[in-house]
Image 1: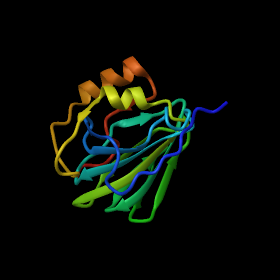
Image 2 (image 1 turned 30 degrees about the vertical axis):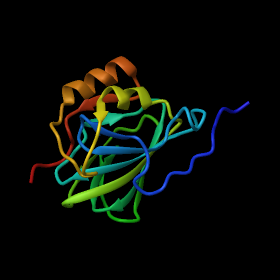
Image 3 (image 1 turned 90 degrees about the vertical axis):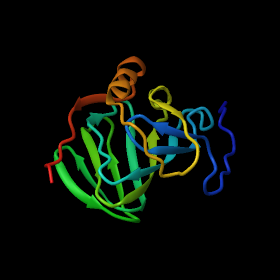
Image 4 (image 1 turned 120 degrees about the horizontal axis):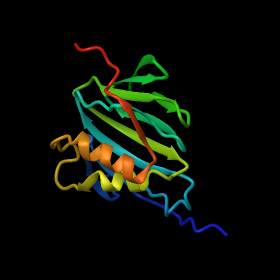
Length: 162
C-alpha cells in the first residue's frame, strides 16, 4: 500500500534550504510525501552558478526552466535552455549546468526520489530573499555525495571559460 500523501503548495510555499553547491531550494514534494516516486524542488540561482560534472546512478533528473537561461551539458553535448524549456539527464548520464542569465529559476525533479539525504546534508535552512547567495562549499557537497550516495561527482564543470 502506498504511503504517498496529497500535496498542495502555492507559489513560494515549501521548506527552503540554502544548498552549499549554490542556490536556494524550495521543496515542493519530498520523497517521503511521494512514497519515493520523486523529489521536486524549485531552485533559485544567480549568474555563474555551475555544477561539477556529475551523474545520478539511480535517478533521472529533469530540469524545467521557469525563468532565465542555463547552458546544460549532457553526455558531452551543450545546449542553451530558456524559459519553458526542459532537460532530462537519464539515470547514469554525466551532466552539468551553468546559469548564463542574471538569475534563473528551475523546477528540478528526480525520479525516483532517492537523493534527498544528499541534498539535506549539503544544505542548511534558508531565510529571506529567494535568490539569496552564500558561500559555495563543493567540499561539503562532495562529502555528502560520498556519504549519502545519490550523486557521483565526476570532475570540474565542463564549460569553457568566458
